[in-house]
Length: 197
Image (cartoon, rainbow, N blue to C red):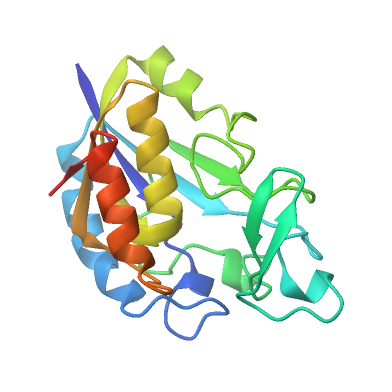
C-alpha cells in the first residue's frame, strides 16, 4: 500500500504579504520539506486562476471580497484576485521543495472555482488526481498546506469519500478561519472519516 504526501496550495498569495494571506502560512514550509522523503510519492496542488476569474470579487460589479454569491454550482465566496496564472502570487513559496511526482493545477476554468484537489466546486468535474493515485497504487494520503478550512478541508473530505485512507497533519496547515470556519471544517472532516493528527 503506497502512501503519498499531498501538499495543498503553498503559494505566495496564501503566505504573508500575498493577496489572500493566511496567517503563518510560511511557517509550515520548512517542516513540510523535512517530511517529504518519508513518503512513496509527493504531490503538490497549485491554485491557477485565469485573470478575471468568476470567483474574484473584482469580476462582479458592486461586490466586495468575502461576500457570498450564488453561482450555478452553489454558494461561492468572492475572493480578492489571487493566484493568477503566471503571476508571482501563483508561484510556490520560494523555499518549498517542488521536486515531487506531480503538480495538479486547479481553478483554471473561468466559470467555476476549485477548492478540492479532486473536484471543481460542482463536486463532479474531476481534476484527474483520483485516476493518477489509482494508477500508482496509492491508497493512503497525508495532507498538509493551505488553508485548513478551505482547500485542505474540501480535498480531505473528497479523498475520504473516494475511499482513500486520509490523514490531515493539522500542525502543518494554517487556516483562514472566517466566522468559525475552522471548527466547522474540522468537525466535518472528522465526520467524513478523516484522521486529524
